[in-house]
Length: 248
Image 1 (cartoon, rainbow, N blue to C red):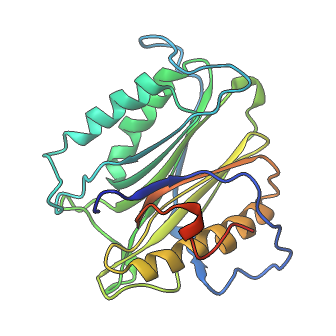
Image 2 (image 1 turned 45 degrees about the vertical axis):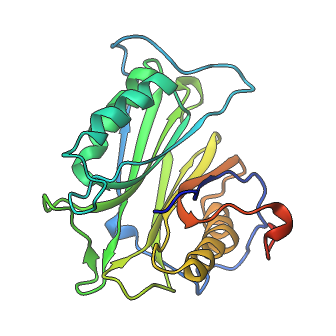
């Protein structure tokens, strides 16, 4: 990832798609998803999240913890990211480049930030092109992206998990994916990690997520709640007048 990059994007309104078939730009892969829900933590160092009705915080983290990338720091990003989650007290955390065994630690810190509320995690592995199975970290655990979220105890109903890959992929062995969580009545959140080898392809994947996957999945989930999308988009920032496409 090269700086400056577009890493986080939050959107509120999407068109509603009525078709039952998934858009051709994505493939849903529900069998690869891992979801965990935790009830009130009721212990720890005390709440850090804001209960203001006007506050909704999204924290985006690329933790570079595969064990292969040059930015890998012997796993140090996990405790550092966990402490940042606790200190920030976010409502939603979108996470990229983590191993499946990292998620429990990160979710526990979100639970500590909101000790009286419910938290959930949705993990989706990247896909290995050669095997069409979960891409692996150096420690052989699944490698991918996750959405973590908090819902007030009084508002908790359930969370529905969704995930898949883009139809358009680059020539590398890692096929890019997205993960979404629909926390019933509270929020709808997605994350992704787009191609790093081709800016046009990353933009195509971004459009597939925002204009196809998000509205389709949100409609399928029945959600009318606020929407947030965060991730590592591997795209350069641009002024509004320079953007060749606009949200619609």
